[in-house]
Length: 236
Image 1 (cartoon, rainbow, N blue to C red):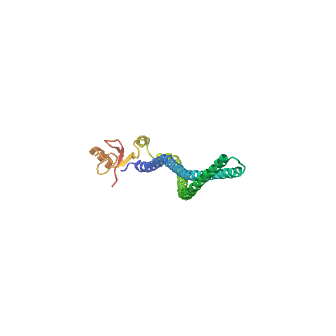
Image 2 (cartoon, rainbow, N blue to C red):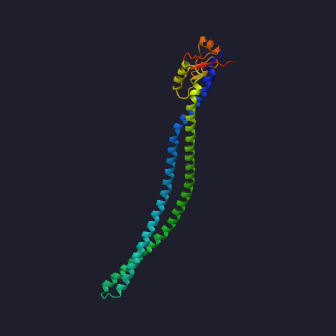
Image 3 (cartoon, rainbow, N blue to C red):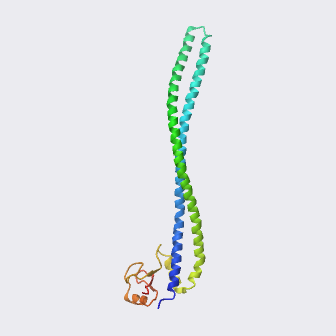
């Protein structure tokens, strides 16, 4: 005759193992969320870095343009002042300064043209990175929100499982339930109640004694001789 507690204990164990699985999954969520946040920060940093390179080059262009404007203004003033200078050496010095400014302006204008090309290249690259990262950011945000929703669902299911557990334990005798609960707190993922498999314990896979096997064949719940887990035999 099968132990009257067996069916109730199997139902309880199925619910408990499912709850423990959900709890384990819940423990992993913060790490997954942190990984998504780190990915988001990396994408934002990548976008910002590309924009910073662009701004740096644009600023360099503005500095060149400002220097060209300064040298041009200075040359114009020198040109005006040279008409009023009477001494030849002062006049020649002014002309020399104007000529030097002209050379500097020519060099700066060439530099500006080169930087225009660089700015265009950096701008295109920054836009490309921004578009690509924007897509990845949307994906990351969706994943994060999905994990938040999943976390809420799992917490609700765990709370329900905890609330429903007393009703599942009501049909299991106290002594057996106490042993079961102790085993449930043991090694992660191990089922307290396991089926005899070809004369061996379904948990430790060691052969049980003939006496234990005989008791199990009568439909009783017994302890494994080796690991002390609860054992039952298939009625068939």
